[in-house]
Image (cartoon, rainbow, N blue to C red; front, side, top):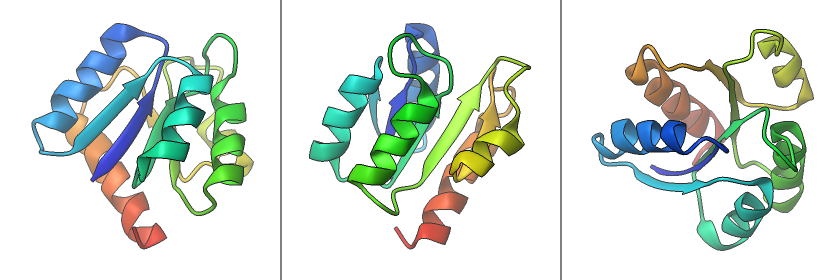
Length: 121
């Protein structure tokens, strides 16, 4: 599975890179919404995992732009902020939601696999 991960926190990106890489997934990490949109145009990704809160372009805006550029590309939202509600993100168009910090990396992987299967990717 080819995964684009977007988060402004380098340690989160490294953690995700480590656990997804161990499962032989191809992972590209970026730290901003602008970099993410460039990557999506170039990338051929199966799924995108993005943080909700980031400086500059937030995750919801990134998701909407990705959906405009690559309709059908699943976008999974993540956040460690308790005031961000998963149901709201799904209503905005997210394919799924995962909580940070990642207490169960296998659950994150299963979520990514599930949304890619549903999208036919």
